[in-house]
Length: 324
Image (cartoon, rainbow, N blue to C red; front, side, top):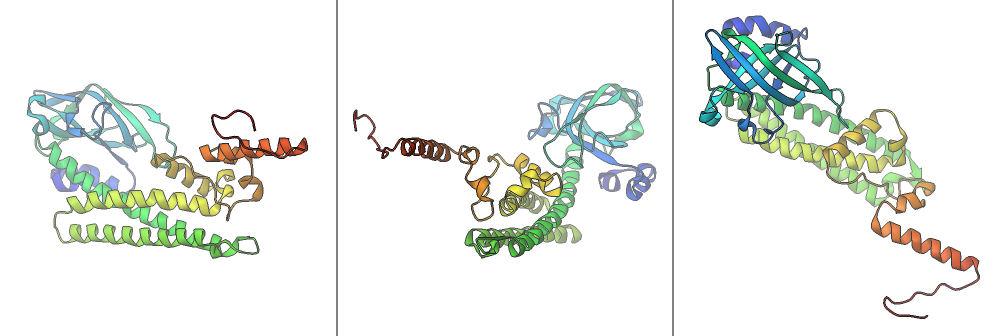
């Protein structure tokens, strides 16, 4: 979309046909080791010499970096101008001085590889400049707005798949003589998952409508990104709880889903509920020791068991008192 919106006719003819039919793959290079959320404090430098630009610097967390053929990269042409000194460039993968130095391993979303880029006296012809010099911030924001919408639309589809499979699991898996969907803790989770799915779908559709009408969708895209990403994490965690221990043992889609959910959340990996787990999983000391209260319970149970074996009645002492 940045090439379609800001590119010259020559740039559109050169890049768009291959990007549209899948023969080429693009990536967006903006983040740096010290410029993440504060993206416009980037230090990658572009210096003009005649009809060419020379770039030096480093980019990290570049989605698609290991497999992309063309990169939209941002560099500062005048650090004293701050955000007005940012400029955008189109760079082919085989450009001398441009290197994809490594693929960054991730916990989840491994089908979208992430890489690190290095520019070492990377020379670009003037025609590789996208838009005008100093207009990189506008191009970046426009690209990010489209990117958020495209990414979130696929997330809503994944959330729908999660919900369908959880409903099927709740209907077919039985514990204590009835489907686990009969347990309120399970049915409540499914209701919450559906609510998050429908609110996320509405926010994406509102964003898409604004783009269709040619209206500013900056705030709508940001709101949708926040809401949908949080809902996706929570729905993934709820799905893990509904499926119980089978998720941790599987090497298939549910295992990858749980890894993605835990990687996107600062919360610890969830333990399975008693309604959906096998007795051996719920009753093990290892399960109880994952939480402080569980650790206390496991040690108390072990102490009571040892005293019972000796024929003694367990007695509890108040803290700070001696004797019985």
